[in-house]
Image 1 (cartoon, rainbow, N blue to C red):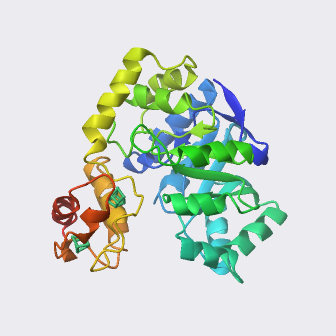
Image 2 (tube, rainbow, N blue to C red):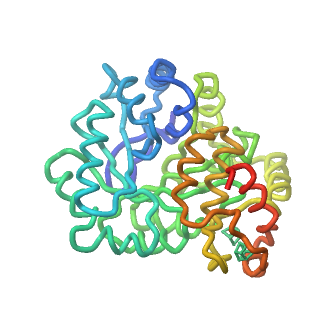
Length: 335
Ligand code: SF4
Ligand code: SF4
C-alpha cells in the first residue's frame, strides 16, 4: 500500500481510504470484521460523518482495540459554534475515542461558509476543540466548484474533499492547486455515486492523478477490499485499452449524469436540482431508501413542484433532460 502525507496536516495515510457511507447497510459486527481486514492490509484512513446515521457508532465499536491503526476523519453539517461543539462531543462519544484526527465542515454553501467563519460560527468551535486536543486538524467538504475555489483561499482549511471520478472531473484544476498549496485532497464519489460499474477502472483513473492524496471508495464487504486495493496500488499509467474504456464510460453516462455544478440554478420554483439528484441517487444506486428519503425531506421544494418551464435545461452545460429526471425522482421519493 502506498502512503502519502495528507497536505499540511502532516498525517501519513494510505492512498486508499475507507468511505463510511455504505456501512449503514450492514451492522456493527460486519463493520468490525471489515475494519480488522483493513488494518491487516494497511488501510489506515477512515471517512465518516455525523450525518451518516449509524456509521460513526459502528466504527466506534469496530475500532475497539485497534483505534491506533487508523486516522479517523468525520464531518458535521453544523454551522453555528454551539451546534458544532455539540456535534464534536457526539462524534467523540460515538467513535469511542478522545481524539479525532480530522474534523470537517460538511458541504457548506457559499452563504453557509460565511456563517461558519463569522462570529459564533462553527469554525470557532473547531478551533477551540483543536486547542483542547479533541481534534487534530480541520478540513472542508463540498460539491460545488465555487465553494472549492473559495476554500483554497482559507488558511484554516487543511484538507478539501470533493467529488472526482471519470465523469466528474470539473475540479481537476483546483485539485492541482491543492498540491501547490499543500492542502490534502480527498477524492470522494469515485464511482460517481454508483453510476460507474467498473470499480477497478474508476480507481485506476483517480489514482493516476498524482494530485489526489487519498480516494475513499465506500465499502460494506471485505470481498470488495482486495480488488480496490489492487487498483489503487497499480501505479502504471493507464493503458490504451483502459483509456478507451474510460471514453466509453464517459459517453455512456455523459448525457445522463448530473455533475452538481449548479449552472442550472435558479429554478423557477426554487427546486435545488443537484441536491434532488444527489439524494435520489442514494436510493436509485445505493439502495439506501430510508436515509435518502430522510435527507430528501430536508429540501424545502420537492421535485414534484417542477412546472416544466424548461429554463434549467437551457442552462445545463451537459444538456441533461432535467424535467424528465425530476419526474422520475418525484416518483421514487414519493413527493
Ligand atoms: S423545468 Fe422545473 S426544475 Fe427546471 S426551472 Fe422549470 S420548474 Fe425548475
Ligand atoms: S442539472 Fe446540469 S447544470 Fe444542474 S447541476 Fe446537474 S449538471 Fe449542473
